[in-house]
Image (cartoon, rainbow, N blue to C red; front, top):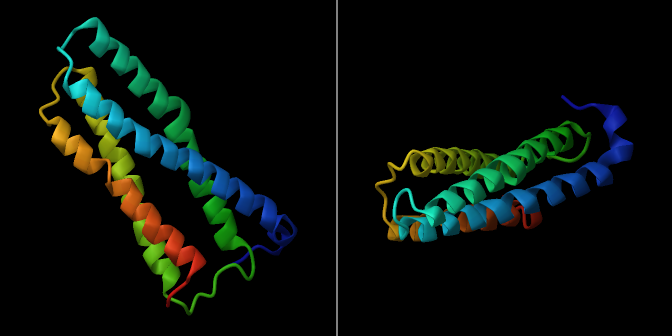
Length: 150
């Protein structure tokens, strides 16, 4: 299903999609780094409380709105005639990776709650490794969109 009135706005929608995706990715790259440093702080300390504020603001004021905007503009792109050749497979891989990225976003929200309630049990090493997940997913997504290998 496509919506023909979106065609004249294609480049604007694409621009908004890319800009919101960049903001989403920036937040997804930074939040696990905050968790790495938060792990080394004493629970209940002034520094720990400061990190809780930083994490909440990053998630609520940047990452969440950017993810919603990315999804909104992505759906509008899909509804724009001629944007996707439905017989090709690249968009399936992209969609899967975007779903996985959204799931990772949800996991980071849960981890934030763990820090907020002083019940984080994960190590800084866990968050260092988790910090690589959005990078790998982003590389696959960008490759699917630009190269469209299949």
